[in-house]
Amino acid sequence: MATMTPENLVYERPQSFTAAPTHYCPGCTHGVAHRLVAEVLDEMNLAERTIGVAPVGCAVFAYNYYETDFVEAPHGRAPAMATGIKRVLPDNIVFTYQGDGDLASIGMGEIVHAAARGENITVIFINNANYGMTGGQMAPTTLPGMKTSSSPTGRDVETQGYPIRVAEMLATLDGAGYVVRRSLHDPKNIRLAKKAIRTAFEVQDRKMGFSLVELLSTCPSNWNLTPVESLTWLEEHMLPFYPLGDYKIAPAITAAKI
Amino acid sequence: MARELWEGNQAIAEAAIRVGLEAYFGYPITPQNEILEWLSRRMPEVGRAFVQAEAELGAINMVYGAACTGARVMTSSSSPGISLMMEGLSYIAGTEVPMVLVNVMRGGPGLGNIAPSQGDYNQICKGGGHGDYRPIVLAPASVQETVDLMPVAFDLAEKYLTIACLLIDGSIGQMMEPITLPEMRAVKRKDYPWATSGAKGRERHVLTSIYLEPLEEEKTNLRLLQRWEQITANEIRYKEYFLEDAEIVVIGFGTAGRVALSAVRAAREQGIKVGLFRPVSVSPYPYQRVAELAAKAKSLLVVEMNTGQMLDDVRLAVNGRTPIEFYGRLGGVVPFPDEILGEIQRVAKGGFKMDENPVHSWMQRMAAVTK
Image (tube, rainbow over all chains, first blue to last red; front, side, top):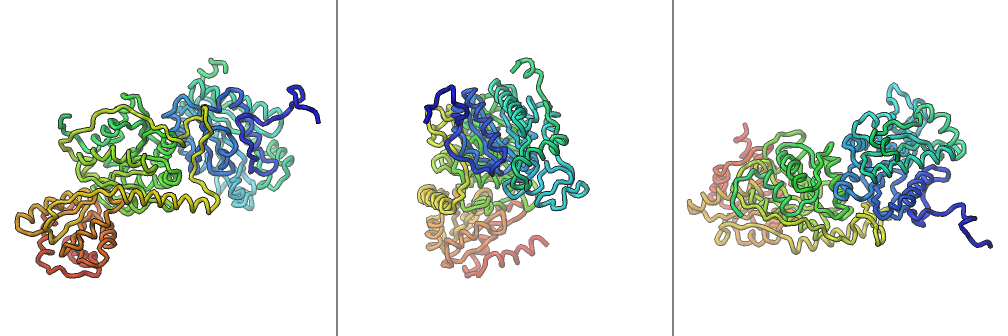
């Protein structure tokens, strides 16, 4: 067996990760999103200063996977908990990791006002167009016509309303510093997502205000697709509805050339 | 310290600052707005955290977050707002982190009104949020007593890793009284072995209220109960007035107890052997002391600004051994001392009959008052 050397090391667990295997379904992009955050914490050497806030939803056990302090919020309330932590520990790094049901439905009040206050926290927002943990019900991000376990004939916008584009909406708030949307459906986009996550944490570390990275993600189990089909489905259906882009970059952040 | 004239809500806020409040998160609701307003000015002045949240849901979860860091933290609200906070309070109880809640009750149910009431006794004393837990609830009867209990509430919350609530009503919150405030003391954040403050040079800390394995949740429930037994053994508080030779024992908490004291004094002047027992800790409730008093008394008279919520606790303590009478005013109506004096006189003349349910006879008497 060959000895591991820096030259032949192509993959290792980030130091900000615990050794715990994740509970996520095979092929789900939560694992990718988790790893990107861990890599950024490693690169910026933030783990010792960081307090994560886990949501209610598929990422409820996020606290098992990071070598950082962590709290677990009530459904939707992660931005409020993060606010409470950050206001008494302003030199620490505080991030929430929330799904679309948690952030854009039950927690809409908390996220909008955290952004409006310019709360100096980072939000990782996973948009997979359904409620993953409870069995794939319709989410505020479910696409028109999309079948879920609570929109069995497809989301009917006449009776069930329209999806919410969170990044665009939060970008209208003066308090929001850095609000972007990225996707996790292929390697190029994963690299771009990591860059955005890095920027978001840099924004917080420099006390430049509220940062949110929306990540388009897959849910093979509830979409009833294979992992590979899910990536294609995301690209073909979610990208047109949820365009990738930088929706808000405050002038001070641009000027800082992070 | 000099005695100064202070409004209750402002005095509560200033007392909290002086005993080391590090962070306050709240939302406006009458009749406790002056707490929020006072702290919005004073907390930034002393370099501490203040946020006016988007709702009580946000406020209580900001408290939850700050409590997880080990900071001395509180919020305040009134009845409908407390209902909204119940979710967060349950999580805080389940996570076993300390906080202080100031609960300035008003008339209800529903939107009710903004007048003083004691209608939320059961809500807060019996837990409130989902799950099996009990907060510590202290019910002062004056601005001075509220201010004096502020450091007690923080110390109890931090000693037992629980919610400590100061339960008052709109009249205590908004009346002005001459009081002495505590001295300003420096903030000293405790070095808790569980606080989530960044895992520098130590193992990481995780704070949650989730125990997916029922046997683990059962252990947690048992741990909470064991802590509650300690609280019950050590933290009973009450005040007694004219009880040495009392044949009639009036029992009332907070404002109702205070009004009853005036009635008891007037009755004493008329030669009626009556005294007042005023529970200060209404959770844990002084069952033992009530039972001792009941054993010596000919009758008890429970006075509340609700339909007899604490009466249930008194009946539990007395267990049918002594006649109990009840007098309540509801929905934001505060009884006058004369009304309670009339009740004391009635009970003194009435021959101390055992009543199946004291609420029923009171309802009949109330019919004449409210028609």
